Length: 223
Image (cartoon, rainbow, N blue to C red; front, side, top):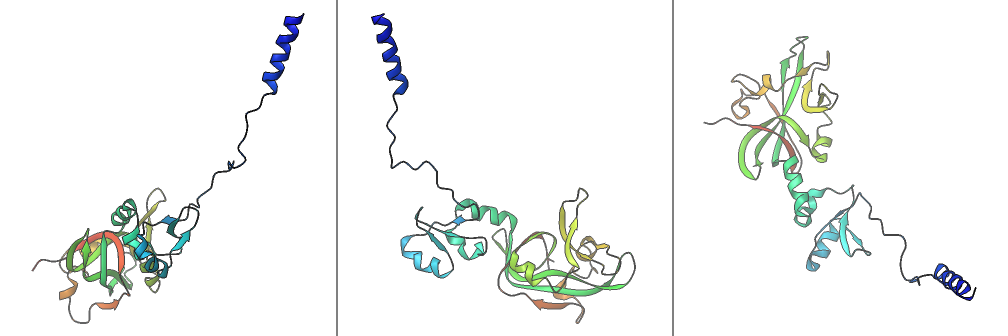
């Protein structure tokens, strides 16, 4: 009986034993908001990045920007993968861009309608310099350009067959049919085929403000 009692006592001690818990341990891990983009900022550049609108995260001791900020302003401090993704989405960059507008007949209802495209006096395409080119089959535009295109509501995204968003294109304001870029840019005589040498008065150019970024197919003529 003595051996049984001793065994029971030892078992009770083992069952009641508790590991010491450090009171300094934080049981809940810190959650980093998903809408933050963290920057790589050298100490000597902190005043500059702060003046542009970046915020300081005291917990991680890093600068970051929120969704309201334009990443293009902070491109020199973005992580490498962020820049690569932006370049893939917006390979065309121009600080001398215009909305080129002209009048054509709708391909369905034959009504005279205004159509537009983006024309660049100069810019880069995948970091290669280019002058006097237009952009067709546009698949992406930055937020600043979207706002500047609001006066032309019939230039908007199309819908792909499966309901997904398609490229940007002109739409007839009367019958709604898409005016495909194929018939506006591709052949001599098409209204946007050679904008620099278009007949006087046939194309109206409206300057766009600042630097625009977009993705599409560049088109230019070789003299």
